[in-house]
Length: 276
Image (cartoon, rainbow, N blue to C red):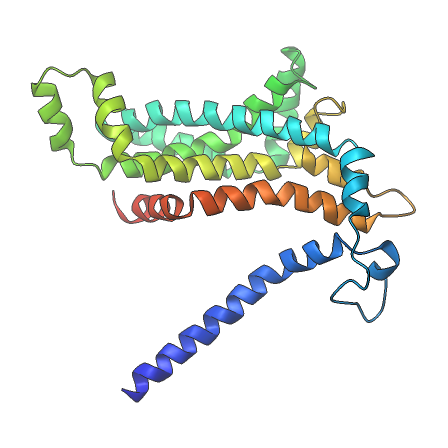
């Protein structure tokens, strides 16, 4: 009994410490975003602002390009996520339900795309986009982000589709259902947690991506939020208040996405990792 109580206490304390460590950067960012600039440079630092202000948010929203970059990020992230999800569904269903020559090779080949370092693919991608006249366009970044999120999305969904009993589909085939009908009416509804896991992964990856956006979107009409954060730093100065306020604007949508899909996201990752 004593061991059980001690174990419970240790787990509770460890969990609290872990939560505090994880939340501290976000709490510091939120507090810093409502501090006046002089307070951000005080030593030792002031944990709570002496005179809270929304001046940093006013600067970010009305006197910077952050609103435009926010819309760019929404368009590009949603577009690439939807495109990657559609392609991943069909590719994953094929890998999970059909046997064909070279299947292990193609599955491994898909994963290789996820393992390639950014430096190895950035030049070929830039040359390809320039040839297609897609540099500094929404479609250019959407296609690039789809490329970098699709391999892992395919592997995650393949594992999830394999976990669905094939007998359900066989019964539907006996009743005269087509393969597409089975996919949309049976497999996908049963795969909601896996689909949400892929959706969240793809959206968060594209929302936070910096290197490709920096190289393929040099025009302000296409730049995304991560690039916008860098614009608050100049050669001689950094507006840390603006950086923190813009970071909050960038973080809140992701936090809401995780909170909204939390249970389905965790369930999808767990099922995809433990079943196959």
